[in-house]
Length: 269
Image 1: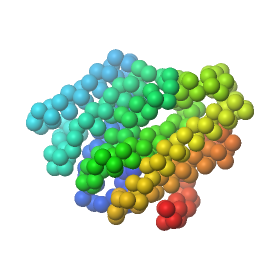
Image 2: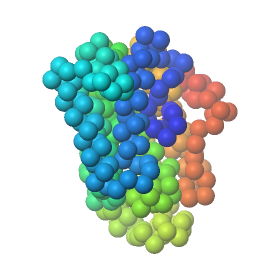
Image 3: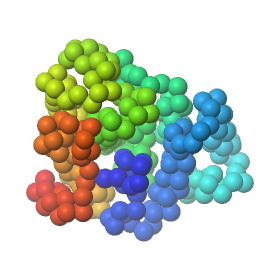
Image 4: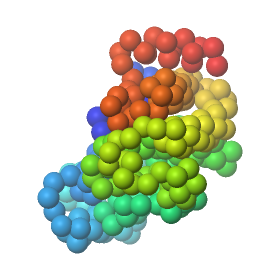
């Protein structure tokens, strides 16, 4: 389900066909390096935005038929040409990373889902294009899976994001359940917090299950990859519930011992 800190990109899976690995690695390198520009280091916000704008300029060059000289973008140009990949998903990723630089709160769930549309859904869309399966129904269900995985990552990382002065829990939901930012700062797990997190967990689960039929419909390796991804997401949600929604003191993760269980559940889907 996760590779390093770019959690929703199932790269280097043993299920990934060898012919697709160079393409996936090029996309991953682009996404991870751009994500690092937005999140890592001590650069000022204007410097981060400028660096991401430079990435956008390289995509413009590729779109215009030019060949970039920098290795990262030269490889990306090669796989875009070879696989006839659309550039819109890559531009959407840059849009989300720019948003990370300047946005630390989300007013409502609709706004948060729009962020997920650009931060997570492009990954699934590009994978479907690589597999030649990017039709309307498949893309819609892929979007549901990817957005759900992004939400799950937010719910398990509430404490980590708070340290970065970010809150991905919608402000309208915090107000609805009577949870203010003081509770986050104090890491207070009380009845109001549990009700809030139970609501968010169930919402993410419903979205994930809405996209799950895609994993059963797609043949071969990509279908099995998606089954494991879906089961991994469901496992994290169950782990949040098992921790009584205390994501401050025990961040739910996938351990090596969990993978056999996930494989069994994927077989039973």
